[in-house]
Image (cartoon, rainbow, N blue to C red; front, side, top):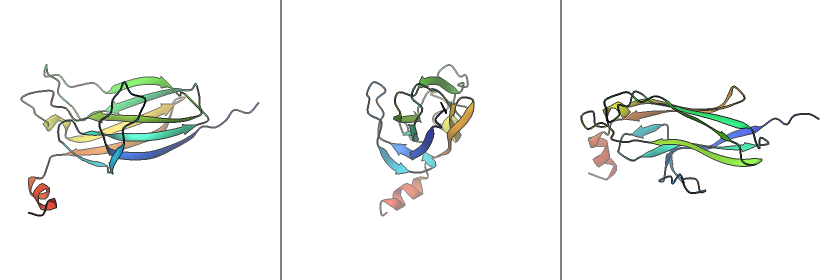
Length: 145
């Protein structure tokens, strides 16, 4: 019997509503963008739809730009595995900007964040987000001042 080829599609990417890891619901897209303003607790990432791959192991990894934790050490990339749960499955891969080091502030969050999904040793989806510092002038300009 011929093996079915999975169908993978990035359905949304950018800023999302708060994600509750204990809920079955995925976060909702707020704005499509690859540029993220570094504000604490901003949720960003991408959602994929995977068809014809139930039971296949999916590897994910988020490469941070050099975030410093509370102990002053640079965080390792965040990686893990999950099995595709159905033959028409939506998966969210994302992260949140956090103030982990009191001296560094949000500075170590600035830069490129690369998010990658792999299946059977092959990259099936990836997005790179550029996290930038807030431009106070642009912030007020957007509000009509």
